[in-house]
Each structure stands twice: as structure tokens, then as C-alpha cells.
Length: 279
Image (cartoon, rainbow, N blue to C red; front, side, top):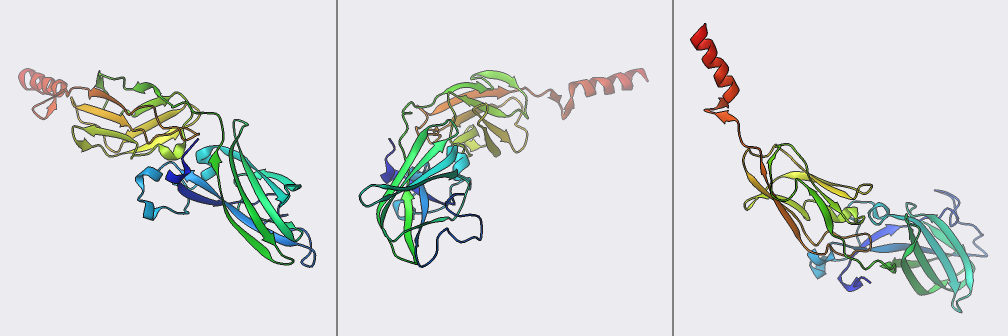
């Protein structure tokens, strides 16, 4: 279970297909019979430990797509009375935005479950004491989501390319790592996957492919010949349940040696010599 007190909140508004007929349409019911509840969700950020407490607050996910980062497919919203009697329950896509639900005046509680692409209800949030009046919208505010799944296993790295200690590595090759389980895409970036030459950071781009569980670092420019490089993935890389990588992982490799001699290739030098002597 994640420690929410260390989590940076990411706000994503929701719209259920059954909560509102469509974009621009008013909620079901009439103003003289119904009131409305408007709400949003708060998702924990994997980068909370890097942010000063005074800077934490509601903001968008680092990647801009909370549902993709946490692989949340559907949102199941249930509205209960103050006596915990179910009023309505709806399911809609996690990618929906800015919705509200019409209910009769009264006091209500909201429970929200997030279903991942793996089929589990792995996220949950709830809020109580929402008072709804006729013809008005009750701002329920953000419902803080927390992980309720059963995954407490820390991910590991099962293989790397190049392998640790390898030599004669091509200069333009991507540096990759395959994880033991799917990772949260928003935790795989240039702050968690680094390549260095000594103490000098190599510039490059980082991507993550969930289908193969593979993180890739592609250098912005070709690496240098005959040089030792170190790749590092830190424990800020986390899986879908926000379990951190079991341990910081580093591996080294050496690029292919230069075939240059005196500013040109040895083959080119040989051809010049042959031409000078025999022609």
C-alpha cells in the first residue's frame, strides 16, 4: 500500500458516458427536481519524493495521460446515500473528462474504483458528506485515489543491452533494459535512466514500450570510440502499483575501438599508399 502522504497529487477530471449524455449536453433530470454533483480524481505521483513539500499539490500527470501511465481502463462510480444505500452506479472510460451526475437533493457519498487493463479494481477513492440542493451543483472536489491491489513485489531488471562488461559496442546502439513486470511509463525518463561517460552525462532520449517491458536510451549523437560507458536505472522507476525498482541497477560497456589512424581510416591510408607507389 502506498504512503499517500508522500504522493504528489495529479488531477484528472472525469466524465461518465452515463453521467452525462454527451459533451455540451446538460445532465439528466430537471432543475426543479434534481441537484448535481461534480467531482474529479487525484492520482498519486511517483515523483513525490523529488518535490519539496511546499510545491506539492494538484497538477497533471508528468506524461499528460494519467490513464495511460497507470493503465487504468475504466472508472466505476457509485453514489450512496448517507445511510450507504446505493443510488446509482455507472462505468465509463478513464479517458473521459469533466462530468457531473444528477441526483435528488440530499446527502451523498461517492466511491470510485479504477479498473486496470489487467481487469482488476486496483485503485479506489471515496468521499462522504456531499450535500446536494435542488437546481444547484455540489462541488465534491477531488477524490484521492490510492492503490488497493495485491501487487507488493518490487520489479527487477532481467536483461540489458549491451550486457554488463560487453565490448565493441556499436556507437549508435540504443541502451536498453527489460523489466520483470510492466512499469509506469511516467517513471521511465532521463531522470531515472541515465548513461554517463565517467562523470559526464550523455544526452539522449528515453522511451518505454509496455508490450515488451523495455526501457530504451537513445543517445542524441553517436557515442565515442573505445570508451567505457555506464548505464544506470534508479529506484525512482516504479511498476504499476508504484513499487520501486528493487535496487539501483548499473552496468558498463565499452564501445568499438577506433579504426582511424592519423585522421583517416587504415583502409583509406592503404589505398592511398598503393596509388602513390604503383601509379
